[in-house]
Image (cartoon, rainbow, N blue to C red; front, side, top):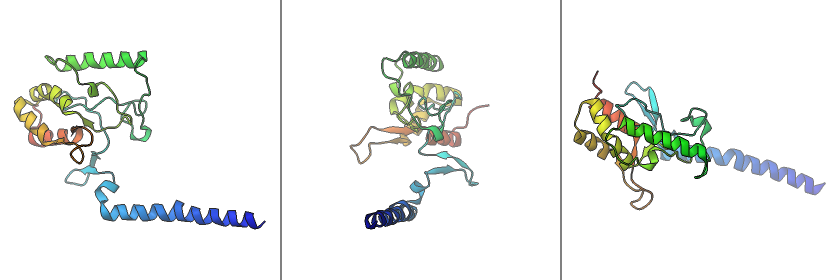
Length: 193
C-alpha cells in the first residue's frame, strides 16, 4: 500500500511540475525574451491585419508572383494543420508523374528556362517550408519581371535583399522567403493592370 501511495503522489507531483509548471515557465520566458518568434513571426499589414507567417509557406499561383515549393500538407496542400510530406520514395510512380507534370508546367510558365531547380518540384519534409533556393528565385525572375513590367535586374535586386545566408555562416544553404519577397514586390513594383 505504501508503494501505491508513493507512486500516486509521484505521478501527481511530476504531472504538475513537468506537465503544467515547466511549460508555463518556458512559454513565459519565450514571450519575454523573443515574443515575435514565440508568436509565430506573423506578418501584419499597417492596419494590424495578419497576412501570414514568416515560417509557414503559402501558395502563389499568379504569374506576377514568385511561386513556392509544392506542398503535400493536407489534401489540397499548404494546410498548416496537416503538416507532412508525401512520404513517396524515389521510385514511386506517383511521385515521378507529379514531378514530371510540375517540370512541364514550370517550363511552360517560364519560357526559355532551361533546368528547373529541384526545390520547385519537390516538397519539404513538413510541406510548409516558406523558402526557395536562390536558384529557384532566379529561375522565376524573367516571368515575374515580364508580368510586372519591370526589368529583370530590378527584380534581381529585390531578390538579393531577401536572400538569407547560411545560419551562423555555415549551417544550411542560402534561401529566399517567398512571402516576404512577394509582399516587397507588391509594395515596390505593383503589377500592371
